[in-house]
Image (cartoon, rainbow, N blue to C red; front, top):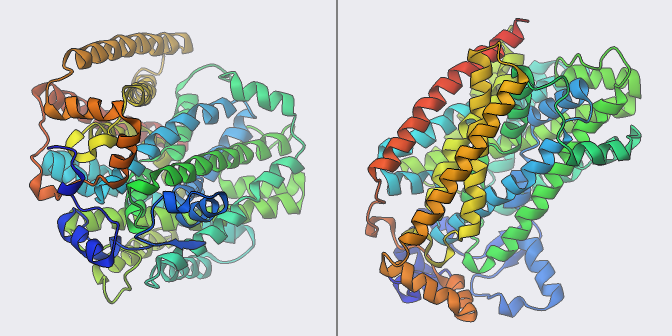
Length: 569
């Protein structure tokens, strides 16, 4: 397939061209083409980047396009995130701040790939996996997402429950009200209105920053523990579980599916990718600042108190903060927990219903009203209803669910990231937007680190007598194996250069930077039914199969470890 702009529909030009592009492109939903209608402005479908090149117009364009990156990143600091960061701060002080710094490139690299996939293909992540790799491998990725998302939505309502309990409100009042509000936010048939609600919640989420200032942290210590890795008490299964939980709550699989679909739903096309990259980068910075603040507040406010080292739940942390740091800090923490839970519930539920719409080929857009996309909103309502009911069931293992979901997200992330990297290297799908060698090196390192962390946790669970030194040695050996394997893949990739006309044409296009920029602005993936199925070599199938088998074992081991911790063993 040649990278010829005339072969595919480009969402640009007149309204007649827009209609034609919808018919010729892979966009499943006609609501996904047209003007970009954001919370703070509109970008007309026939506008180009050059027409908005002046400084103030660039700013207004950015404000109109921003949203998917901010929502997915701030939504990452959801109820589970608040609990996990609070646990890290309350039990280990500021010693684990370094994990957040390391996760910044992981977040941006992963989400930048889905930005390109969404804008260039017009196809959601789930649908793309199913169509390129088949139902078997599609189920491999999507079933995990559905299970994990369903549990994650439950944790969001747990956060709502705990926030209301802090203020003395009964859960059977607060949780139904939250569920109804979340449905009303999304079901108005207006993408702009939903995004404005999200911006309002995001603005309040920034209250975590003054909270961290009010507890008077030692800034020299914060810098030290941010840049120097520290393992308080030595490496052990419990500490590894918390580190993986931090990874899982910061870089969760639902984020990949949500942002790709939300980019499509906002009608962002390739010409606006640079703006969406800025949106994503700003979101990454804000979410990591928020995560650090949530860790710092209990670390300093509860230091030298009986609550330090005795984390029980986010509610327990809020109560302890009220007792030791004053009602303002405790109240703000509880309100941030409620706010984070609402943002997370909206984003994760949308991520799931977007994916269901992809899999079952049904209308799935916030531009549609419930009357025009009934199945989409029924899925949305059912997910909210079931999650709310579970939390209201007396004696439900809510703490177990909250702890386990974050660790499971970290365990399952490698499989989601593997498919992300495969799609980002698919020249038929992304054309001139495929990953560069540098991006592949970084993403490969990310995947391998995630695998090593989950391997370490599994080993520590199966063999509880392993020492910290042995675990570190194992991680070091794994790093060496990964480095050698990466070098081998790079050498093999260079040896295969020039295998296909697409390789030669892409390299030729990259030599002409101006021509490549113009080509990228208008290149869209053709209709999926016109594309050949992606080839799955025996080696790739064996690798994915091995990863799948391992993840099942790791999944079970994490459940075992969480149950042991919950029962005090």
